[in-house]
Amino acid sequence: MITQLLLKNFTAFTDLTVDFSPGINIVIGENGTGKTQLLKAILALSSPDASGEPAGEPLARKLCRLYHPLSGQVGELRRAGTRGDAQVSATFASGRHISARFSGSAGAIKLSASNMGAALPAVFIPTKEVLSLVQGLTAEQPDLSTIERIFDDGYLDLALLLAKEGAGDLNAKVQLHPRLGSIVPRLTNLIDGLYQLEGRRFVFQPGRFVERAASSRSRAQHAQMYQDSTEWVFVPSSKHRLSSGMTAEGFRKIGVLQRLLSNGSLNPGTTGPLLWDEPESNLNPKLMKDLVLALLELARNGQQVILATHDYVLLKWFDLLMDKGKGDHVVFHRLYRAEGSDIVQRESLADYNIVGRSAISNTFAELYDEDVRRALGGD
Image (cartoon, rainbow, N blue to C red; front, side, top):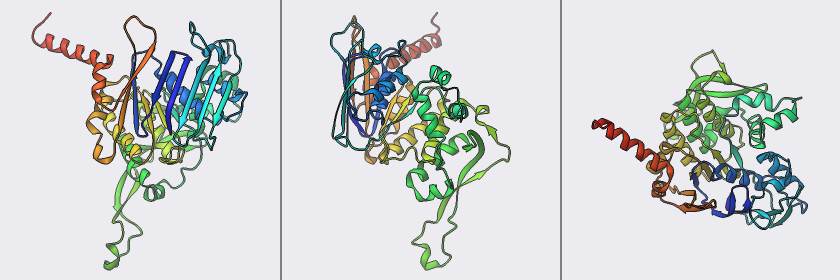
């Protein structure tokens, strides 16, 4: 997991340092304050491309593939109008530290690193859903140059993870692994079905997980007290399946998390941070409560989560559902510009009240006031 990120003279940031909670981190801020840029910096610095190679060529390529600078040169990511080199640095819980510097004219970067152990790559879920794009993005003979012009590496990396084999007997996995037993059935029943990979494309199988008497349970009365009485089993509700593209985009976003857990690409306690950019995008508000419950359960099982969001409903569910008695730790990071300044600043608190100082809260308060004014007969 990442413990600290430093961004200096880089994209939207002049000088920003963020300390992250090992639990859930929620980044809020107006458009243009760099929320997505922050997530992509974490993705780059936690990737195998940040290998410690002094010349830094793999990391320079990764940054260019994530941010798509017009020139194709990493130097364009240096913030215009500032003095000194750009710097991106990250420190991880393992003690691993990596720092990269480059000038505005650079095509490569200078990399310094310490305590380099095995990297734990982050898992990044972008704003747009990827499930329906997997077949094209992972084709055996893709038009790679065209794909890379359209999609940045956030999309391509996720497509490869989704296409990874390893789902196997999901019913058996759900019984063996607590993280799957508590989360995957919840996500599946939330959308009334399961996304399954066939060939290189995903299909949607309608159905639900139901609790049944454990098949391995002994009938001997003296043995039953030592055995689980029930187990979760996925039961299809129809023989008619759908291509992923024929299902709602909000369902597909839930399906991404479902698949990552099922095939082991996301394994709480052993994988890097989960980065999710605007999970609320195209998601019906009634699904948000269960999504927040699933994310809280992931964090309780050792998964670091870093979200960027604009959504008041999602934020409020975190406030209402987090349970400190279960070890929940939610930190809100507010990115903002002071009046008359173009410098992005950061405020972090493990307190929902920070949302009240954001444009999100102000906008919903304005909407509420307008609704009340109309109800009272105002013009």
